[in-house]
Structures are given as structure tokens and as C-alpha cells.
Image 1: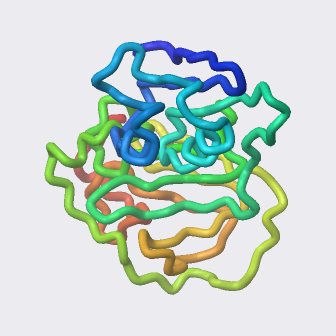
Image 2: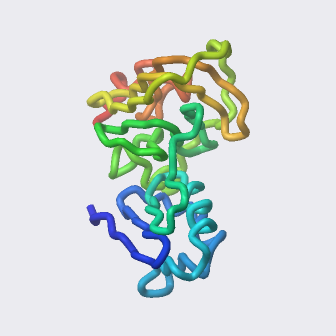
Amino acid sequence: MPRAKTYSGDDIDITFDMSRCIHARNCFLKLPQVFDPARRPWVSPDAAPAEEIAAMVRTCPSGALTFSRKDGGLEETPVAINRVTVHENGPVSVQGALEVEGEAVLRATLCRCGHSANKPFCDYAHVEAAFSATGEPQSDANQDPIENDGKLIATAVPNGPLKLDGPMEITTGTGRGLGKMRRAFICRCGASKTKPFCDGSHKDIGFEG
């Protein structure tokens, strides 16, 4: 996998990890003067105010983009509530105080179609695979408030689901709550009949990942 590369500016450094990118194009659509894939180098950290760049980077769903302020501005901190979002025909995105496969991150997009070549991270393989799964499932999981008092740890169970340990709120792509809990098993084989949750179907289909 390509290594992360840092682009240094006067007021802000921008780091890009290609192995995490899902090509959501937030960066180019919001700040094309800074992020332009047709240009080399494709990142120009001095082409916009550092605060604008930092605000945009915080919207990068995969966490492929991160920043470091050099002007005394605020660095990125975890959002107040660890959030897991289920996307229509696509991955789950996680945001908060996170640890994914042993790495501390603030944002990540994780595969649930079973086809990513970069598991547990999404690589947009769900598009080519024509993965179909609602982003608005029904749920009778607990909706009572829970204290967001720690990190959310995401671990890929060998040949099984994504195990999430820690305080979290799971929502649909439109923000409707699916449950507030401290442990969840999210399907990542694509075959569960109770998506986004695992129902053991990975065993039936011989999922490897």
C-alpha cells in the first residue's frame, strides 16, 4: 500500500493516506484550489486559509486526510459521541475517539460488502460489486442515552464480522437512530439478513477476510 504523504504549508500541514481514500471527492468539490487530482502536486496547503482547510478535512469520511496546524489553530479532536453510520448500498463510517485495528484514528470508513481488497477499510469495491443493502434498516435496539465515556475499538474478527467495543450510537445515513450500545457485531461479508448486524452468515458462505 502507498505510504501516507505530508504536504507542508506555511500555516498547516496536510497528510494524505491513499490506502484509506474512498474517493468521496469532498476535498476537490469543496476546496478545488487546494485539492486538485489533475495537478502535481495535487495538494496546495497555502491556497486557502488554514481554518478553511481544517474544516474541510474534518469532513473527509475515510480519514485519509488529516492536518496539523502550524499557526496555533485548533487541532482536530474526537466528536462528542462515537458514531457509526450505515450508508445505503455502501460501507459504515465511524467517527469519534476510535481505535481501528490497533491504530488511533478520528474517522474511518469500513467495508461491509465483503469485496474490499483493503479490509477492514472500504476501498469502494461495493460499487463495482453492485452491493445492495439499505441504509435505512429497522431496529429495536436500545435507544436510551448512554455515557460516552471512552474510545470505540473496532476489530475485524478473522473471517467474521466487525466487532465494535465501546460506547456508540449507530445511525442510518439520514441520521435516524438504530441503537445506542457498548458492543455490536457489524456484518462485513455482505450476506447477513439482519444488516447492518451480523447473523452468522459468514460461516455459511465461507467468508474470508
